[in-house]
Length: 296
Image (cartoon, rainbow, N blue to C red; front, side):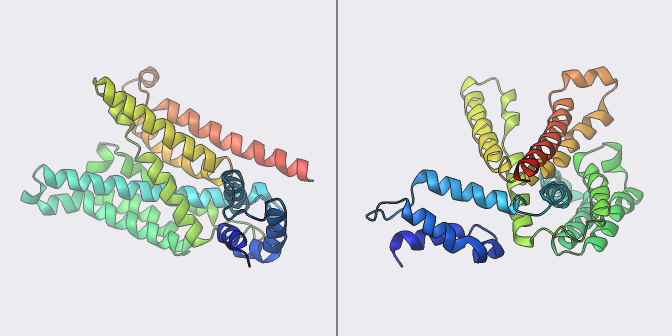
């Protein structure tokens, strides 16, 4: 086996195991035949093509019903991403509370934030572990039980309060997944969720600073982050389904805190997020249907 072939086979490990068993040798033969015998590394173009191909296969492009895979796995990934984002926001808020003097009243912090965070974390762990029914029960409980104990998050309509409210219906609907649609592989689901969280960690809020240099750096970070996400998501379009519910958290927060509906037009972090979420879901479904029709 040549050095080039070994490196191609390393790239092919990005594909699902079943796909590699069926197609790896055929792909290697095609790739090797197109390269000069002296080349030792895959070209950048072929590397990018192989990675995008792997993303498409993970997204269900080779499945018998790619649209069904897109929708059902996208719902599962969306529920996981929403819970993970809620946990992340909750952790950040607890850190802020303790930095502002929460150590003087730790029981109050536990009552207002801690119980909610623990229950959301438990729902997320159950969902990652494949215990979907348990995750559904825990998500519903996370929306009800902590609010009965303390209404701090509910009265302020904080984004983390909306996380289990948004995730619970997605998990419950996911229980009706058709038998011919495979569940999302755990490692792939965790990777997708981490990517969506990384998207939300881009510091877009720095646009508010007056300093021009900060605004330019922030704009560059946003553009690069958005470009990377779109490059991945246009190949594995489940991400377009999965990221949509996470964008709703900010919209729901603004809807609950706006005195009048028309004020939302002036709030750039509210309605545009909702519009983007809807457009991404519609775009993903339409493009997948068109590809399925073309393949047929």
